Length: 245
Image (cartoon, rainbow, N blue to C red):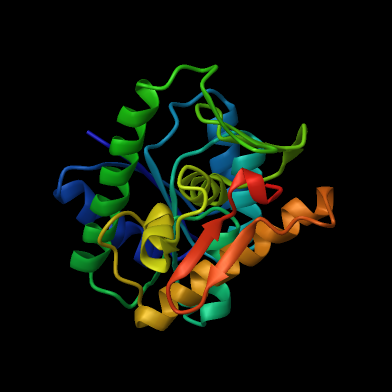
């Protein structure tokens, strides 16, 4: 039975969501603020399988809570549940390492389905990881990807990628020289079959935001980095090693 953690200062919403999740078979633990939730985890409590996180909260907002979780190596998938519907907030959440972003006005049926998709994708990823030895890595030219620990190295220097960014780089690098669609890259973040709330152009916009951040992180280490090519209207590709990558 999966354990879901809810962090939200809206008592009515939090309690209602907790009861609904409990009714459909999830174990639920809830907190009114991020600091208390972090204290709970640091105290040695079992980590949740998934975290539902509000954006606007006192003391620590949702992005700050997510950053603190990742800094402490808690890698449970995070879904933002918020009243903030602008695309800029969704892009910031995904770039920060969240796997989904849902407006609170959506029905519980939709929220439940999104949770199921994320947990299903997490389960498949864990199955794949179980088959990969800790020392296993993928090397493509000057790029090294350590698959178990999700760490990336460019010419011997570690690139500070989020797990979602790592997945995108891995997908492109494992098919170096071949074009990878926007849809396939987007599915690395949301799970296969997930539909963006902003339609086709919405998920393409999210992928472009991710790729921009990935390029910036590589260029912080190597100002001449140019190994991610765009195929307009289709997707991106990682250049072949014989192209200097």
